[in-house]
Length: 155
Picture 1 (tube, rainbow, N blue to C red):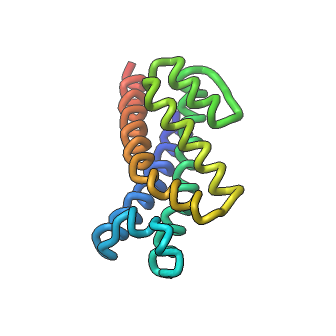
Picture 2: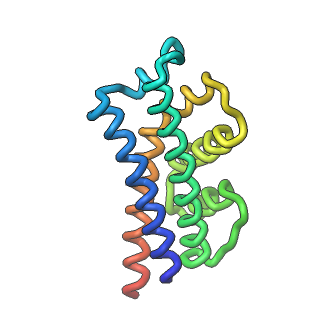
């Protein structure tokens, strides 16, 4: 159980870093996600750097999130899976997430894999636009799973 808590703490810190990047872009730089992902803005270095750093934080946040989910599934559901999509499907099968969240998380994993293996401006822009939704979804699910874990420990 200690390992689950440790993975949760790491995932939560990574998510906080992603949320901080979104806040910085929107409130301190006074930019919008649309502004940093607009195709005509590919010559504006400030906007490109903001977008690219957001994508990088997205990548490591998903990695930490999946590591937590993997440990949660192992301990809570008694199953071990090697691949991210298997973990997400296991959460759905156990009714920990609904079908819509499952599809969104599967898309999120696909987008993370794309950012790691292919870096085209059009793809980077498309994925960056989805990050706020992915961020909210991961936040909600982390909190839900953490509450579930607390209830489980009390039993």
